[in-house]
Length: 558
Image 1 (cartoon, rainbow, N blue to C red):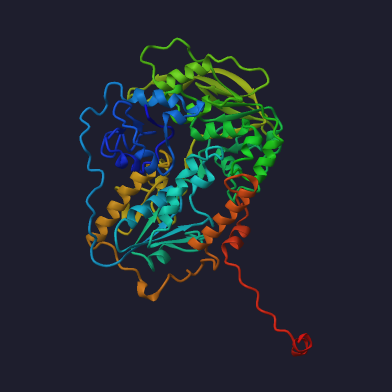
Image 2: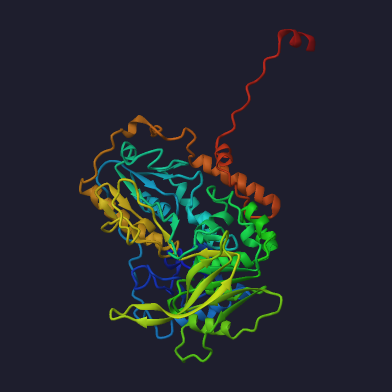
């Protein structure tokens, strides 16, 4: 197999377009593309031309001769996808739709949220001549969870920011960062300068466990913990020192974030020092006494939320034991790659003295223990039962036990907050919509639209649907004109907008400063985590006025 996909897909599909023999699947238009964890290269059809490698914006493709030991399992995964020939027709796909022509006149759109969903939305809009997009975010920095959510030891995943840099430098693109909609500006203020508003605000809070003791010190939302070690300005000053004094931590939940947290807690600080982890978090982890992280899942391995690429990366750790408790070793012949890998982990023998990550399934928290701070978790064993509607549920068996721990992290999902002025479904944590349309002129994209599901690349197909609805409304004459004419010049500051809102040049100044500081330490960047420092870095330096010397001094110097 000449080339191999080695991580979750960004959904840009550049590799599919570049491939001259149509050997990368599922492709846009094929079943499963929008939901796929990753794409796969057909080893029988690949002609070893390397076009896919050149096209991929996140360096996800590699020649098989360049795979590291940790990436070797992807050889089998790519080949296994084509067993049974899932795409037998290999019909040429219309991957590039015909460019639609918009109604006459300029279209101006405000996008709220500078994360992947917001930037993919801007990209889709800017494919059409005459469109101008202003992307707003309450933070002085863009990229959302791609900057503040992706684990620092996953620098390859952060490669998607190269694609974002291409998007933000397109003609017609503008930033207004450090501006919070609902506090500094309202929806009406946005419509003063734009035909439409797309809310791509993501899901900023965590889901609750709903058990006693979860608010004790040392019981922490994984969303906050991730923001802390990634240098999010709202969380960089947090201190988890006391919670890192014990030898065991418990993570409740088994999605990708749960695996990230477990990996960072057990990682060698010397390795983390070569990443863009926040300096304060790095110092705290250097003093950490945590040796074991137990990851709890209330259901079984088949229902686990983590992706196969994340599990492969976890299994490949060479300085941390990754173990599975209570998992059968005798498996049927039609075992899935996930099941086979978990069985292999279950058969491993721990190495004395190593840090370890233990995956425990069919275990649910009952309460967090402790008086003044968390000291452990009471858990109950569960069993799976299938309801009349076909849904598999975890049902408590009544068998309980206690797991001692100094740190308890809940990682059971992100949840969106209501958007001021928009309807909100408390059950799903989303804004009700039709193909992204809340009403003509108001749209949603990303997690606020579909819930906290999918990968970074899922936001691309999500944005395509929303933008199609917006352009349909524009063509139909359903979008009212902005109150302010474009000929009046750049948008003026809103009534509550801070005067130091960060534009593209300001963000590029922050980016240069962080990269320059990182280069001195052999790191990708050293993040600026203080909001005031970020704003000061974004402002262009004002040259000091030239001092006029007194006339007597000038005469004396001649």
